[in-house]
View 1 (tube, helix red, strand yellow):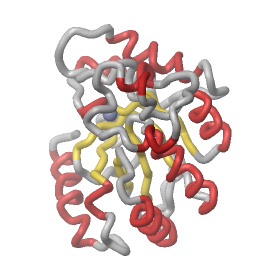
View 2 (tube, helix red, strand yellow):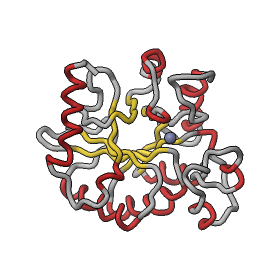
View 3 (cartoon, helix red, strand yellow):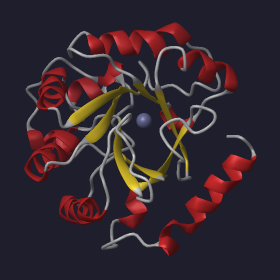
Length: 239
Ligand SMILES: [Zn+2]
């Protein structure tokens, strides 16, 4: 069984690090495609949007503790480099970061330099999180550019294939999903369910909001019961 935790901003780094250290001592922490051990709950850590706090707080912690994670990169918001100081970058409110030109003026997201360094460390696996962070289930957008263009842009700066895509806002329809499966092996949305393995039956991986566990020392079956029920319901509905 596989639990994929989803994070965005890291509001309490101390609490976050202590939680991740605890679960990593009790569960295998895996990346997409890693072998899953039978009878064990494996955990995959995913971080959406590439906020600078990931580079500042999480990346050094991953290196120190030998833990790996997935970073979903929304290509448009990533700048080559920046001269904005770290406190200003860390203090951009979550709901402002993607507004207008804020990403250029205040650099709340990681830069390509930082992303390249993290990818080359071997501890951070990059995923595409689309080009413009659009809702792929509605509206007018260039599907090729969001799915394929974003992948190519990330592959330009790293030396291996990007095989994971995280749907922005967790939104997708059947048409977009079947197109995306032609270009990526692992496709993630929200969904609040456990997963059978890396592919389920519909090639969709479901994630659970990691922030709700932050105050816990360990998972137990009661904490995960509702996500297990959703998993069973997905199996019955062949999802
Ligand atoms: Zn996002």
